[in-house]
Length: 130
Image (cartoon, rainbow, N blue to C red):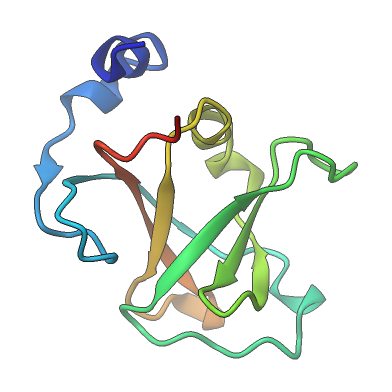
């Protein structure tokens, strides 16, 4: 399926957002689309995981088997340490994109209020899973 058609059908606004070229944390040259800014929720469930640094690359992992919220997206470090989850208000569209084979990642943003870990979420363009 053509990405533009999928994105237009999945919300329209995503297809009109500007592309940030060269922003890929992986250095693979793919352009990226900044989808949203969110934060890491449920941090208290993972007290032993390290606090990430601003600019650190974070993995977004779908957890559809989580009974509390089947649209759950876990936030982990590149080393696999789970930091928490994206709040449910941030997961609907993103979960659909990840389930559709698109790849996304997070970058730690500037420090949030009350110790929240701010996450800027990017969609990789041109790196859809086969």
